[in-house]
Image (tube, rainbow over all chains, first blue to last red; front, side):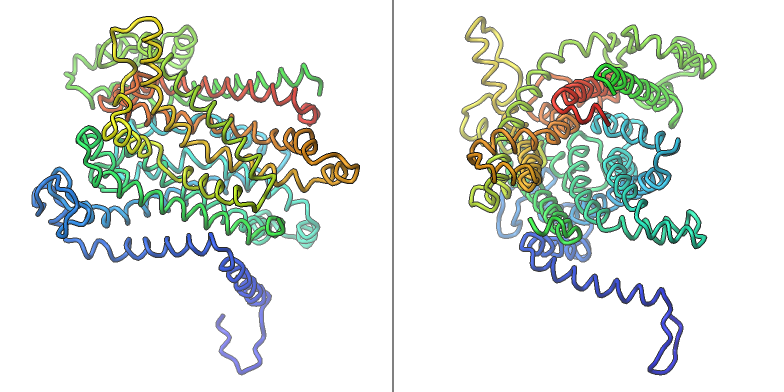
Length: 306
Length: 321
């Protein structure tokens, strides 16, 4: 706020709302940190988050370029290469570090895209509940809910071609439906509350009602759902990568597994090349899931009593 | 709504979904970047004359609505086009891997659901017990594991290092009768184990949370007040009611099991639809990919229809709504 006044300042309604929200956030944060699963999950995610940010600066580009890779190919872990080397002589540890950023970025952006589509459709359907708009959007959502995601994802990504953006797009397009359904049912119930009617009586339009009343009330559920969605998106990326539908130039964790698999790591027993990326995916997915469950508990008090 | 109208509306819904999938498939491969010819040109070299000829054979010179009608008619009569790689009809190519996939996915889903539900029942009933916490953590770990990677680990350990099971494929070949069945079961063990482990956690979590919800219902309190023995409360009051939402979720998650199956089949070279798809991706064999898309969507839609109808019989309340 631009009020550069003396000690007693006039507070607008909005600044009051934000102060209240900050206080609520503080309470939520403390409740969250009391949850052991959530705490552990958040800690692991911070660890990988730091690697994702600083990692690529620690690994020189030449060391993960197949042409200039420094090591002897396919060596088991040693002091110089703690996780061994791949078939080009690249350090698996370096690949893992570079992959952290890509895997996390794909997971986060794909989940964000899915949430964006799901929330828009869910809010619109729920807000205009019972009308033709709702019926149509609901049918559309149910279609996407029933169609097996893998079939749609394979069809879409073979047509669009293997780029990082397309992988994100495909995951978002195939996984928004559950969010839409969740948000719709939330919006339907919020819409019936008296304060919406009061606001409408005061002359609020659709936009105001949706952005100022519906969204803030749906947000808690949406947020927990979004965190769980990231876990799902990372797993989806892995599946697509293993099937060879990932971006060949973006070394995600899933891509490392795929390269090891196609190079014959299974029959040759190059375990050091296969195990780290899977463990990293497991750790990150598990952490997002645990944080998501913890958030669910914090943000919906009904669950906390159980 | 009567039972008959419920059934009818569910069938209509399923048909509408199927039509949507058909339409989607049509536009996906025609309107998105380029048309089937553009896609064909991506996987092999074509001269201008080739392109014109292909256009005519595929009917791409016709107006779009007419193409659509032809396409729907052809699909309905089982004509899914011709594979680009083997030039055999897609319908024929898809038929033989169907059995192995049904075997694998069927057994995997069966074990995962039955075991998952049993674990969920026990965990949800004695919430907070040692069994509950350890099974919940175990479920979360299994849920977070990429199935393909899990399969690779099992393969390296049990087929590679220990040598207890074959490293992939459907059968060794040359066996007959009982010996052949044992041989196939041997090949089947690791892929089924992978799918079971991959999905057991999800089902256990779903069933557990449903149990926890139901335990707090009023009718359970009343049953307790009436003096119904705990075992009877669990068996007759809690489990049947907790099972209902789980049932729907299991069928909705079938699509995910299919996804896992594609990867697992690729890892274990299991000659099913998944391996077919994997190879089709490698060679950009679009008609086969389209066929698999249609087939698997239709299968999942059918399963969901069966689930909806069964649900209607199990829970009369949904027929009213």
